[in-house]
Amino acid sequence: MLDVCLLGCGGMMPLPYRYLTSLMLRYNGSSLLIDCGEATQIAMKKKGWSPNPIDAICFTHYHADHISGLPGMLLTLGNAERKEPVLLIGPKGLERVVKSLLVIAPELPFELKFHEIEGNEEDMELNGYNIRAFRVNHNVLCYGYSISIRRAGRFNADRARELDIPLMFWNRLQKGEVCTADDGRQFTPDMVMGEERKGLKVTYTTDTRPVRSITENAFGSDLFICEGMYGEDDKLDKAKENKHMTFSEAARLAEKAQVKELWLTHFSPSISDPRQFMDHAKRIFKNTCAGKDGKTAVLDYEEE
Image (cartoon, rainbow, N blue to C red; front, side, top):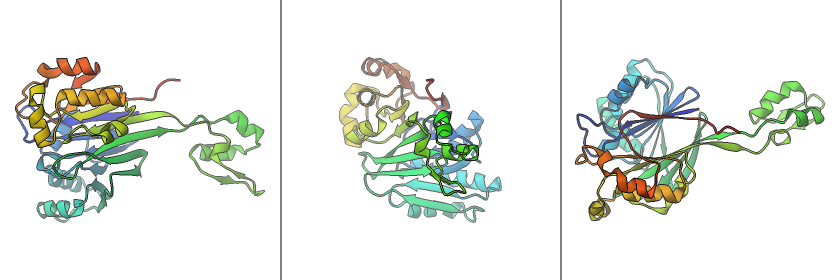
């Protein structure tokens, strides 16, 4: 089961009724944050979620509306007596940017680890999360993220008995370990595990024009969270100029990527109520929703 919360869905500047960009995921006791705009802590507090289990923070890019909440977030973790390291992931320049911000958050009681993304795509594994970063098209170096939770195949107990695999190894084989018996026989997971089953997948991308990398990496996602900076189709020229998207463009990406559900986010401050622009997007991709601060989904594996 994967919990997903869109903590903030505003772009450029915080508003009294809309916080800046941030997404939080929780899986198996570990939390992952993507972007940390101003007021992320307030949004988290309103939701009732704790920052303490955050093991990694991913950044799409380093514009202020995506990272300005980081120093305060790290200070809060430090004041909660956190000792475990926090992994920071982002485009090239991550360590330089973060260390500049840490002038106002010195002497943290935990280690910060930095992973700067190289190339157009990169995969990482962390606490059960498979994190894929993919480059998008903004006016600065920017990445989207697909977060996947893999699901192993079924354990075949009958096959394990046929192969005379000792019961003491069954659990370890299910966890992917290779086991060796006292008599020298070696047992590998592929001997008793079925094909990998469909897991869970969330794709998140903001501050970009529509590009092929989004369609390819969002393909088949259970939830696709995509920027919709402009609600009106007649703002297309402005979207192109500023390297953002309209609602309709995001909906077309969702349709091409065959996702289950689309949440629009990163709204322009000029959009007071994104719901008034949803009709055209829904005609393109029926299962389109206007994001809002605190919007939450609980994703679970498909029943077989």
